[in-house]
Image (cartoon, rainbow, N blue to C red; front, side, top):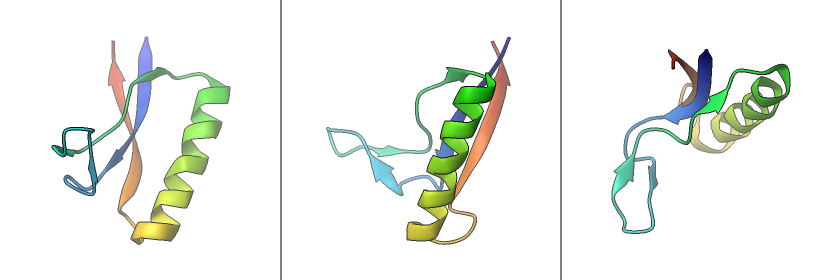
Length: 60
């Protein structure tokens, strides 16, 4: 099964403990999830700059 997540430049976001992160939670690659995460990527790039956020894929 293919999974997707929003990834970003390492250190652009932090967890609650203040540790830098390079990506979010993984979700099944469904049309709905891809649509929603694409919106998150677009908004992240609008705020933090082009290429700062992208969709990452993996086989689970």
